[in-house]
Image 1 (cartoon, helix red, strand yellow):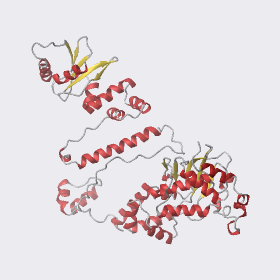
Image 2 (image 1 turned 180 degrees about the horizontal axis):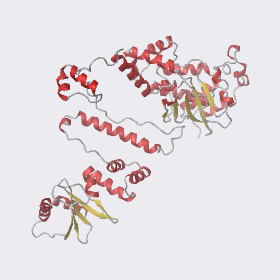
Image 3 (image 1 turned 60 degrees about the horizontal axis):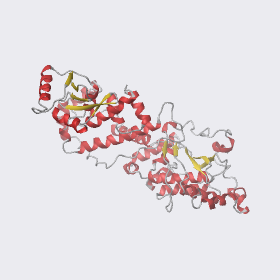
Image 4 (image 1 turned 90 degrees about the horizontal axis):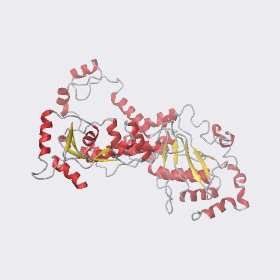
Length: 500
């Protein structure tokens, strides 16, 4: 199906006027060999690599760079009709570098149309390289790469020193901002964060020797990502967000210690406590001393604000295949679950009664597998959760039902078979006998440990360790929870009666 404007774009690329067909070869003399005379270690890389090699070109990670910075993959963005690709000044600087570097204005125009039409797939960003699959109007898919030189280790050290020296720089980065003064300070020190003319190298499976419509579309799409997160640019230059802040934190800690490095006693701790800590590293300080120092310690930071909804998990499925044994869908599910749990924990911590609430129980792996399965992750992940927790696949559904009705206590009643103490058993039996009024028909019950089963029927009451009663019904040859717990057996039996 042809998107609006694409047919015109293809005609522009394939049937352009003869006097433009060879413009890349007949351009102004001062630009004639710009693409071939760029940095020596990148000369003709696209043409000289092995013909069947579509992966990263050799030399993407020079010896003084850090390939451990990792990779981020962003899902395909929706069409960008009627809006600018970049609103931030650094996103506009990225596009200016592209437009100054590309030699064919027709390819730029066609690339913009591809990007606006949503033809660019998931974008993978890693040090020195961005990659995406771009689809033509005829559904031909091309792997496209754009390369940007990484900063050297020395340049990164110098840049981190510049940022650490000015608290405003750190605050801006934390706020996902890249102030012009930061880029200017870095440039004055000989460190170019933003690309310039000729810095964006193109590689594409369409075999174009310069920026084609596919690599151009990828660059326009990346400008949208840069608007959201300037750390994308820093990752391209060789450092991830985590690496950057870890390094800044280490510098701040080293400066706080001073040149003597540890000669001062810890804040709020007496000399005796400092001596003991020095003699026994990691032993800490007596609680009485720490409590006595409360008035001279800095105040705790303000509590964070509540979060309305958990964050959107990252898209992990990109160009780079996962390591053997890594289930990308399962990992994305776990990331989303962690975000949702973090939001709930924060909401609990901010609630008025939190200091008086008991600590939640620590779940075993088998219990946590049921909790995860209760979120409905799909058949494949549910099957892995069942196998990993030692359950048969058909046993997971009753476990999920029990969890939904009573959490860990409900799951324990389903899976544990135990005998109450004699006194507790006598009380339970007495309460069970009083569950029916005089003259009311009573079912015949067979008692087995903590379970009372209707003789010849498919109903059962179970007595939990918490003193509550749980209704169960037999379905497909196994006992499944029939309702929530009740404080007395009559209430639990009522749930069974209501089900018929």
